[in-house]
Each structure stands twice: as structure tokens, then as C-alpha cells.
Length: 336
Image (cartoon, rainbow, N blue to C red):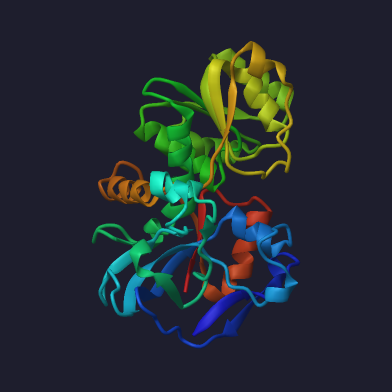
């Protein structure tokens, strides 16, 4: 089978098509014919050599978390059958630690993510496969596992309720767009930011009631404050935007941080946290039942994941280039 592999950790030019042996499923495993696999900032960090998970010693490396397709073959005891249309929950947990026993599973002390979806076939744990309704395409489903699951779980951790205002800095990437769309599903009033007027119009079309078009943090603070106090923030940027969120949140509000697109540090003053009782909460991915809920919501038409571009397997490097250059709006999907 063909796979789009990282052969050097130097950015988009480090992606090459390689031939690999077709996978053979063991007990409880399944081989999925990959019809769609979206890419994420997590993958780009690996490709740019900015991840502790992968180094030059394990190349060639095939990433790809968000797999949707059809079961080709199963091992003994697998919980799915040949021909099933499925979506992979990429969570990998030990199933034995305190956090796996008590939940949520994404707190597992050995938590990892699946990699291997940027290929014609993927060998996966059958218990991590979620059935796909007939009216949900593989392309649409492949958008859900990382970006939308992350945003959904962040909303749960932010303790927001219908009618609350949520601040979403950097609202045009995968998690940002997901946060805006899911805000509408949850009855929240989103305030998003972008540096592009064109992308701002796309956000408005998605139903985002407030869009601040600026990359200047002082201006963002002024514009957001003019709208009103924020009841929570979903922050996938970190860096200086942690301080921005702190300045626009009301007393007692939470900002939830899930990434580091704008910086590897959480930089902000201490005062809002002891004088205004604000909180910063970390979040990674979500749980398989939450992903199952998102599949149901998408299938029912509650929201339609935004596909920012589709690419053949041999154009995977181009997909990562578009992500690195921030040209995309929404999820980028590779279709092997």
C-alpha cells in the first residue's frame, strides 16, 4: 500500500510517498481502507521537528490521527465487521491506571494518540472504531476526532451555559472554527478573532455574531471589552493570547488552553487569578463517548464541519504547506 510518510523533519518538503506492506490485523484489531484523514497542527509540529514524540531515528514516520473509511479485514474478537463504515477515535490509553478507571479517559497517565492514517490502509484497535451513519460522509467525519472533539471537551471544562459569551482567539483554524460552530450548537455567543477580513466574513457566515479583525493584542482587548465581559475563553494559541483572554474575562471565569500555536509559554500577569478568581485549565482531546455524540450531532444536521481543502495522498505535502502558511479556513482533509 502507499503511505505519505515524513522522511525528514524539515517541514512540508519532508513528505514523500512510500510503499509499505499491507497490514495484517491481530486479535481485536481491524484494517480500515482509509477514505479520508484530516491533518492537524499536531502533525505539522512533528513534521517541523517541533515535537518530543518523534525524532529522526524513527523515520520514515506516517502520521494521521483522524481516520474515516471502511473496514477491510478484522482480527479475532474484533468488535467491528468487514464492510462497516467507521470513524477512528485516536485516543490510546492503558485502561488500567486510576484515570482510566475513574475517567475521563483523556487523563490516562499513558495517554497517546494514534498515528498512521495518511495511508491507503490503517491498522487500528477495533474497540476505538465508531459506526458512521449512512448520511455522514467519510470526508465530513474525518474532521471530527481532533478539532471538534477538542473544542467540545474544552466547552465542558469551561463550565459555560446557554447564553454565555465565549472568547475564541484565532477562530479560523481547525479548533477555532470548531469552537465557533459548537458555540452555536450549545447556545453560546462567540467572539472570534482573525487577521483576515476574508476569513472574518466566513466566520460571520458560520453564525459567529462578533468578529474582531486584528492581530494587535491591545486592539483585540479594546474591541472585545466593547462587546462585554466574556464568560469563558477557548484558547488554542497560548503565548501572549493567554494575557489577552485574562483581560477580557469576567470575574470567576475560566480560560481553557489546548495548544501553543502562538507560543510555547502561558504568559500572563498573576493578578487576575488571585484578585478576580479567574482560572486557567488545560485540556487535551476528549473522550470516545464525546466523539460518538459529535457524530450523532453532525449526522442530525446540528452542524456541518468546515472542510478547508481536500488533497490526494500524493499532495499531502501541499496540505501541510497550506496549513503552515495559514492559507486555510477549517479542516484540511487527505483522501487516499
